[in-house]
Amino acid sequence: MNLWKSITFSMIILMMLSTFSFLISKKSTLDINKSSPFECGFMKMSSPRISFSIQFFMIAIIFLMFDIELTLILPMISSFKMIKLTHWLISSLTILTLIIYGLMHEWMNGVIEWSK
Image 1 (spheres, rainbow, N blue to C red):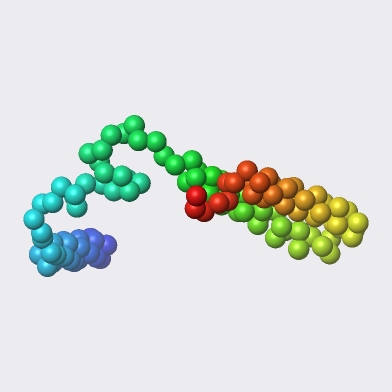
Image 2 (tube, one colour):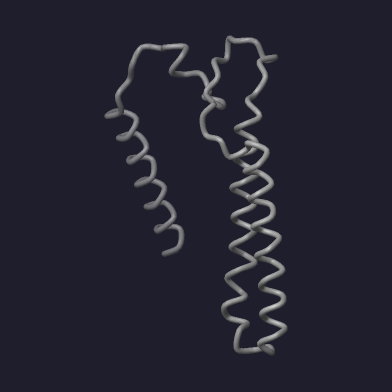
């Protein structure tokens, strides 16, 4: 019987709080711009054929590359004590060389230019 009382009491409190929240909320006039979903900063009424800037995607790829870099470099620090120094040094330098090569390649191709 106590279970039903607590469930009923919880439902009553829930309904009271929902009603109270609805009553005190600000209600404004219906504005089509405010009530429309915001998607990527583009107006809903504009043409869907507008092309995206490739710079946006390149920055996203660079961000993902640095995330992957962190997932590769952080375990190297903790594995320093577990394996031989030469093996650790060779694997660390290989990973860092690949990352630096990728960064230099992007730099030379002008991907990292923030303004044109």
